[in-house]
Length: 527
Image 1: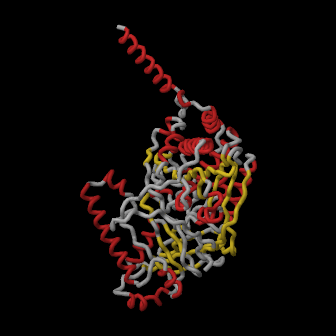
Image 2 (image 1 turned 60 degrees about the vertical axis):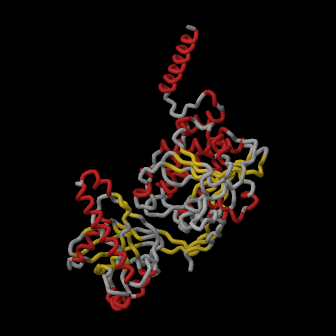
Image 3 (image 1 turned 90 degrees about the horizontal axis):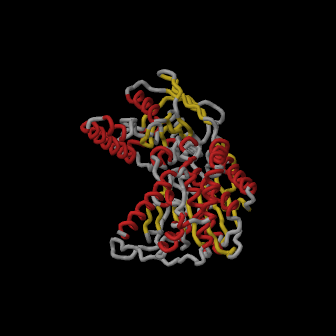
């Protein structure tokens, strides 16, 4: 009877505890067994005094996209330093190189024949402008020729024309939309036809004798009025906007819908004519920077915990989820730490890296320029793949990363920690984002990888990567996570191990090699 009574008491107690937690309105309430006043204050500050929306508006709406070498990039660096100083955090802009200076202006693209229609599109980054003039010309399609010799014979006919160089997509509906509404037979037929068309277009490009990079230059040399493309991102209204290769004529990207209109008109012999005005301008050689903030350590000031996010973006949208949200996470985490944990044991740095998009240049430069910091890194936490809640962490090939990462994560409130899947020891990242620059140098650096939120299709490098795509509840969760991890890494009595795991064998039976540090491009776009 006593055993039954004890069991009943235990069950009721467990149920009561579960009920209390279920009824709690605090989404990040911690387990009483693991309560820590600093953690609780981090959560409290993040939820009751969040600065995320204000920071996002100032960065994404007011400053806008942050293309390396642009005036907006410099404006963002100066803004970040001022914000940190306003929070009593030491910060500076640290020069690491130079880049081609360029500023986007207004793009006007209109069809003026066979009817009038304003077209949705923009110049690519670093596209030459039109010198304050409007260029009007016929539109032609890149021809399907027999070989490169035949293409050379065609090239003179491109003079004075806008040339379409992208495939005309057979559908502007994403595959998920087809899957929802089409018959299975119709969907499979569309995909098969699209595959055939894609292969045919790739062969058409190959027969010109030019690479994708060299073709626009060949058209420019032949006297084309401009290059027109459409890099559809496979989602409604989304195109990816990268850089132009032309030096004197504009390169523009036009939405799938309007590009298809031009293509069909040209193909049917109705010769569309468009007018293009691009007010982009060259701004000379621009200095490039990383913004670095610091909360000085009190006991081990020469050991470092680094919060990491790249600051630059492509400029089709405003760089909101790539990597505005990573930037917000780290800025908010630093603000919170300064307020609730102002005297860390180890120095906490934040790095907002420049020119990640062109090859991790800012973080590679930092690693190269600061060996004294890199050799004393306790941990780097980097966030870069969108607005979603963090759901994955890998040990990045560090043999003993399980021991300290799981210990630090155990202090994170359950609703934030539980969804995070970990893999140990994992494999060292070789690229993708700035943590890889530190991993290559042997420093424990980890990616806080996020939920998808259709990132690859709708916001990654697209014209739709804007403020409205930010999910602030998820970003707030990530700021709490980053702040707690930085706090725990700072407090840990032990220095983190840098022992590396033996990597899997390659196809020849040889163990995989740890990535080597790579030199940054310190002078870009100026050749």
